[in-house]
Length: 439
Image 1 (cartoon, rainbow, N blue to C red):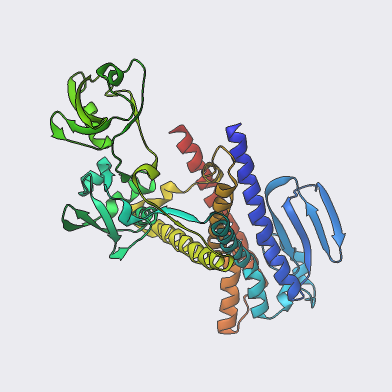
Image 2 (cartoon, rainbow, N blue to C red; image 1 turned 180 degrees about the horizontal axis):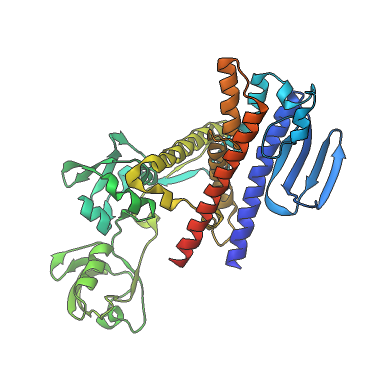
């Protein structure tokens, strides 16, 4: 059932995005007086579930739920009718219209995807507001993963800035450390300030999902497992950590490290209980697991910043938030051209995209992810590769600058070469997904 919910969200999101993308092309074409031969939701190889001709356009629903398409008359693309190209150019064909109109038609889908993302983000901010943990409020600092320790970070470091830019939202700061090659992280350690540059050699591990930091949390017992070493030692819910083996300690990572370090030994743990300190002796088992769950609610320890918006303010903030997401996505794409990053190994296909959706239905999460995928679709579609909108735009811009129109033969050849390349990329991405499943 969990997988079914994930798949349903994926196909619903993809269908919405592709339908509106193609609708952008359709509207722009009709505004410019260009004929649209077909407009389909889903693809229809061999047969259609439904079709109806209205005016000069055949509207339909295909059976293959992988998006949809808009067939514009006289446009040289992967579905071009070569016999039509040999005939006389009709006034309502794409190729008969001025370059600026053709550029508008080509850009229509991408513009709709951008607008959709901005509107979704704005609507979410208007209905839900915004909640986030401010960087300045991460008062206990971070817990450094082994990779971060290797880089020079320490438990308790308070991150301040990346490449000299103070980032107010702590989550955005963490993102910046991963997607920025050679990021210089400024931190506070005690009363002193330090800079640590993340060497590019670490990028493959980071892009593979290796976590550098987590937020440091105090140790307050929430539940104690029946029959566990913690229960046998007398630990109770509500106990807060004061010391380990006589040394001051108050954080969960310190407790966890002590348990792993002293397996098959006894550890003296001092806790505060009802205003008094009590020392317990925990016989740590071979697993290093004492059997206690700690309080993990962020609101218990940190001030969560909240912002609410008027309708107009939400729309403005939605554009700003969407633009930031767009910039981050473009920055992450640049890593493909960073040799040390080995970013090609992290390229994923339909399985990777589907996995970003949760296994339970949450409309806020669904629309937030749909907005992000809309931005990603806009960027990917406007890459200057023949077969994509960006490839068409590139040739039109060439025509506008030079005054020379590429021949239909050249355009047709370029489209098929581009489509071949794109098919190989899709196959590679989905093969990566399959390999990751087996690994």
